[in-house]
Amino acid sequence: MAAEIELQPRTRVVESNGALYLRLLDKFAKIEPADDFSRRLVRSLFSGGSLADVLSRAAPTPVESACLAIIDALIAEGFVTERPTTLGSLKSDFDRFERELAYLAAWETGANTRYQMLERVRSAKIGVFGLGGIGNWVVAGLVAMGFRKFCLVDPDIVEIHNLNRAILFSPADVGTKKVEAASAFIRRMDATSEISCNDILIDGSDACRRASSGCDLVISQIDKPLENIQHWVTRGCLEAGVPLLLVSSLSVGPFMISRNCGCVGCYQASQMDRLSIAGRIEYVDPSYPRPESSICYRASITAGVACREVMAFISRGLDLTTRDRVWRMHEQTMEAELVPFSKRADCSTCTIFSKQESSDVRYAPG
Ligand SMILES: [Zn+2]
Picture 1 (cartoon, helix red, strand yellow):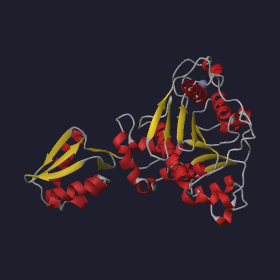
Picture 2 (picture 1 turned 90 degrees about the vertical axis):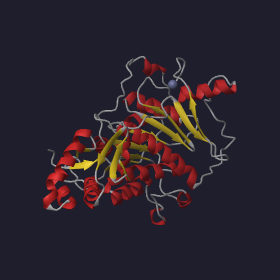
Picture 3 (picture 1 turned 180 degrees about the vertical axis):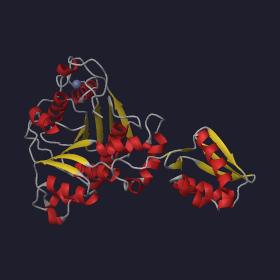
Picture 4 (picture 1 turned 180 degrees about the horizontal axis):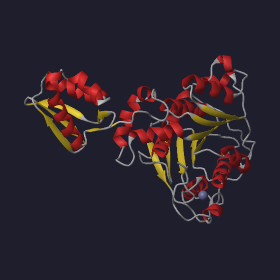
């Protein structure tokens, strides 16, 4: 028997007609009678641990054999499974992520357990490009979910007007580099974190390619210069072979997990078709300055959706929603929509890369 065992967190328990019924998806198990002993045993199995621990919490010695018979039956039915005794090198991860593991249990399969999902989260290196409002909530969400390896990219310093939508920064950080203030936040949240700070300006695809090197995923919410930045980041990540999730206010996607996915150029072209405008916008006349407005909930709603997609991609548990689709929310009605689009042969942003790789295998390592 494994060193540690536990009852699957998804198991639902009901009492009926003097028996305990356990349900896990389409499987049922029955323990009878429903008495103090059987209730203690089920509670003990939910807590998990070594067999000796489970037994000591569940039963006085005289009924140990009854316990073992029930546990053996629950193992045979798949209700009770092995639990790894360590999670990476960090035993404390069990306690810290107890509820996240219970959440991930809903998405696990025999080939991809919740522990393997969490291991991927703990070992993936995420490039976070842009530490404005959305980037703040993205970083906070990712570190809360257990991500601990980051490459932070932003050239700016913290200014007082950033605080209306910041969660990483405090008034004491005003005047310091955003990457350093964000790094300090992450280290406070997770002493095991590994962070590289890059205060460069992404001013073309080359800068993006260099900055994304070594990342398992880049999530970018840089919004300047408006007409070019998403295309530069897309090209840079395609050159580097790094998956990319593009995010802007109340808009998440497209998620490019391989060179066969539609890119932001493909998406914008599809929108131009809808609006009957030929070509893509190459240039925005600076005589029409775009007023910079922002508020916290636009950033935090957007970042929440983006974090869900990052978890889906890295854990390989949930389905990705924003591949060849863009999630958008209308602020006035709070209605969300997924806008589908297709990869286009005439896309000036991604077409040259498509010819280099025909397989659809995602290129994230690990
Ligand atoms: Zn494209």
